[in-house]
Amino acid sequence: MNEILKLDHIQKFYGNQVNITKAINDISFSVGEGEFVGIMGASGSGKTTLLNCISTIDTVSAGHIYLDGTDVTEIREKALARFRRENLGFVFQDFNLLDTLTVSENIALALTINNVPAEQIDGKVREMAGTLGITDILDKYPYQVSGGQKQRCACARAIINRPRLILADEPTGALDSHSSQMLLSTMQSINEQLGATILMVTHDAFSASYAGRILFLRDGIIFTEVLKGRDSRKVFFEKILDVLTMMGGGQTDVC
Image (cartoon, rainbow, N blue to C red; front, side, top):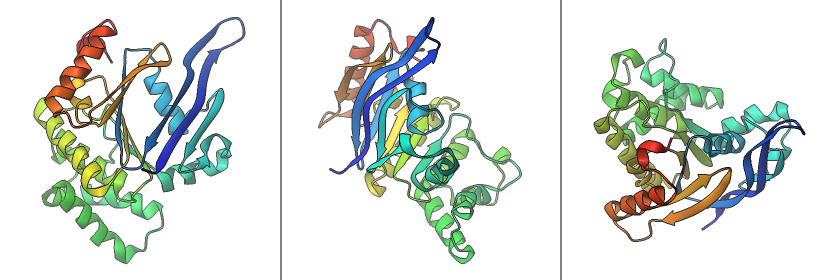
């Protein structure tokens, strides 16, 4: 398995020399091509900061992050927008769709920004919409569709350029249980059928059970990790709950 993402002794400090907060304290791990990795941890554990550093939204205080061999920490600020556009896909909790554009136009926007020829865009949008089961809502506006459909539209937008890495930040946070299950099944299919590499931050053990590996953060370090392997999703879910209990709280205490 090719290594897509590598974190080498990442540190992120806030504050000054008198009062320093170590949000991330010497974290190292790697993600292979085609992996679906979840990140869990209590509020303040550093998981959101970690995702922000990987996405280049925030800068690291020390260490290096490599994406497909490129040292992300060395990319100059002016080149970061292009780097994100060409290599990263984002799925946010609050969808981040434009209400003035149709579902089709929201998905197509990612292609337009990347200068895909206009004659190719419609076919690519319809192909991706078919994969995610949203062909019937392409001409509707975001305010006319359900939360689950909005999030699948956001997934389509995130993966249509076939990015090297998809970053999902609490993707089910604004969804009901049925919509959450549909979205997670969709993400699992994207991972298995399209070979997409996904890194997902979640507070929910049920959502995490769709991943193949979970990293548990505590006080800015990796507390432990759990691999699904050949376990059923039910068994993996129970293992996740066991770790959360060992860390000092049930899933309602983890966010």
